[in-house]
Image (spheres, helix red, strand yellow):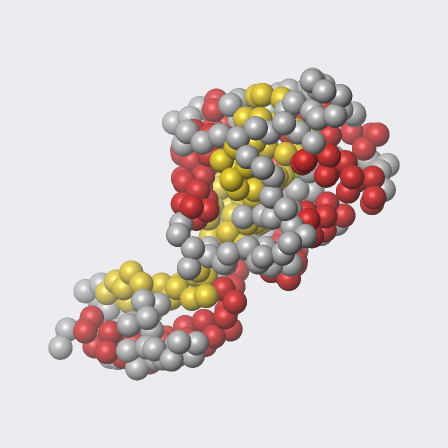
Length: 348
Ligand SMILES: Nc1ncnc2c1ncn2[C@@H]1O[C@H](COP(=O)(O)OP(=O)(O)OP(=O)(O)O)[C@@H](O)[C@H]1O
Ligand SMILES: [Mg+2]
């Protein structure tokens, strides 16, 4: 019997506790690869709600397969199947907008806004109609990142027209007041400003509205979680332990309020030298990958720390549009494809 057949028969002895069917027949085992020197890798595609079962299945498969003398290593990735947003009548979508996604982080300064803008441009480069809403009323950064600073117009005195920039429809509190004014706002004002920017804007028809959240788990996140029908949230983290602890907290908040987490992004994943283009893992690269694996949540992208990303951000010309064929732009476009595929994948 070939090593692959032996592996399959062993995996067939492991039963999914939910369906009581073995994990091969149930298609939980996916993408099995066995190299000539005995390295085994595959994915366990489990249901996000049953993460603990998934971890147990993974451990069992690892220990059984490691007993085979021909097997030199076993690498199993857990991925969680996409959850449907829980039905909650108090949560509302926005007419004309197909998907609303939030870009969040547990910690400030990890690159949420930079990622949100370039993800939005990446989605737009796929031919999609995309909007971006800067929900950071305390420190709006979308006006700077998109190089726009004009007041939105209103045709009827009730609703605002979003600003068009770089192929996106944008709205930010920064268009209406300077950052120092916003900084003294208190909870209820923040919530009502956020609601207005979300619902009293003529977004028109959009495939995706990307919401750039402030860091942490404050008033805006709460309003969003309680009132908006989100297709999913994306968590951005840098690889350091401290950022990861906060990212986990952010992630747990979304899980608690039944918002599907589309995945994690490791930003500033490694340093790419602008002179020689050599790579240096300044922080412990791969921390987010490990976190994602252990929680069964997809790792959507690993974006390097690169001068060109910061420079284009400061100039208000997102790298995806400024140098669309650069390797960094291609990473964002790849991310956009992954996110879009995830949003439009048939639900289970
Ligand atoms: N991959 C990257 N490479 C280089 N610079 C980056 C990268 N990502 C973000 N930056 C820079 O890091 C700084 C912080 O980024 P950004 O404002 O996007 O973070 P944030 O998480 O939105 O912050 P805040 O929590 O304040 O909203 C900016 O100067 C930005 O240009
Ligand atoms: Mg920000």
